[in-house]
Image (tube, rainbow, N blue to C red; front, side, top):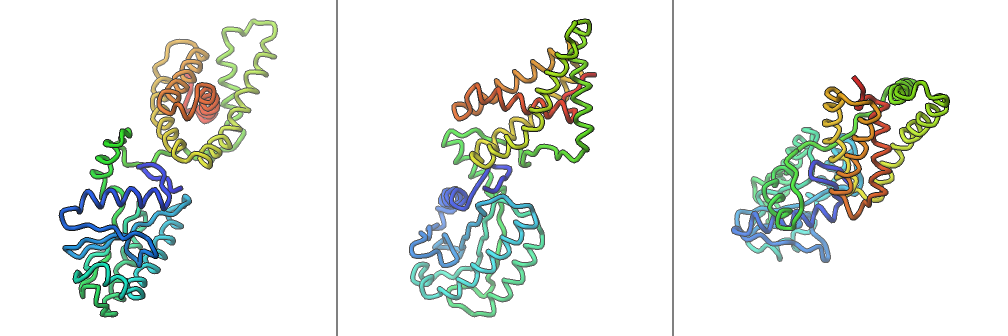
Length: 308
């Protein structure tokens, strides 16, 4: 699924949401859905007035900006040709109206080169002199934010929580040397065990505590990828939750006056409680504690969670 600031989408979930948006936004000018049976003919909806046509597109997998642009460019190229190929079928369905504005509706537009591609396709289409298309046929690129008001209204009516952050949540890329993360975990493990520095088995305690933290750090990436693969909607919500909580952790590290171990325990418990509260029942208490243990190990290794 494609990860966006509004959550993960695939082709079906994006089109389903778009159809609800179009029916709400364009009802007063006669919006009609073009059911894909036997085919969409290059438009998945149109208006009986004002000559608007709509084609939705979202890939089923997540791509970087360049790959996404290539997919979107190729989709536009493929679908505008359908307007000529199926001119008879389209005319039978839209009547006397001519399509003047063809809206390509996709969750994210990350390359302005797509605008140039749209302009070149307009010139090509206008030369066809197709009877169902206006002589000033224009391609419009519409991303999710263009319909944000309608999307939020629909989600609110469905009882879904709204987010007003338009950025996609991400975790910082771990591009440092492994030795740096190991050193951070060793240093912080020693600080956590300072109150027990005189314990006769302090070296064994250090080895055990460091080993647990290091293993959790190494396993946090595979764990998050499994969640992303098997439950992308949950993963998006989890990533947003973790990203926001991370800001609190940075502040806590600067202002905390208790022991280092008390801070770690509190942060881990706070994250686990938040995951259970916001992502239950899909994620139960046990799974929330496991995720929290791995994420906090990451924070310790990369110094989002530090002791000052």
